[in-house]
Image 1 (cartoon, rainbow, N blue to C red):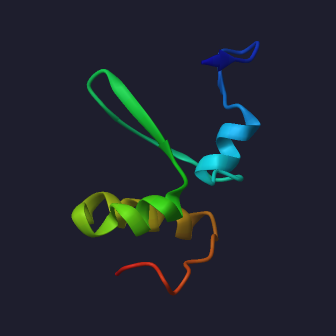
Image 2: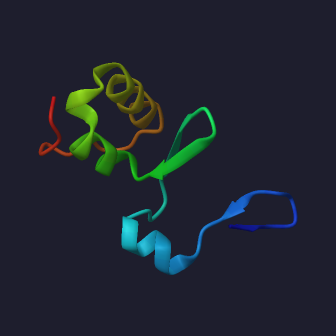
Amino acid sequence: MNYDDTGRIVLDPDLKQAVGINGLAFLIGIEDYFEIWNPYSFLREKGAGDHRLARKIRQKLAQKGEPMPEDLPA
């Protein structure tokens, strides 16, 4: 994993492209690991199984004025 001079994680551009992170990203962590997700990908792939987290992600997207695509599960 790469870090910048201030200690922030720097993702490789090829990795970001491969997983669809092009601006927005969120981290979900449990105990000793974390995952970095494109929020829309998370909602499509995992949102139906974790309603509470999906609701929080939707709230954060709305607060940022981000669009909510119609193809996302409710």
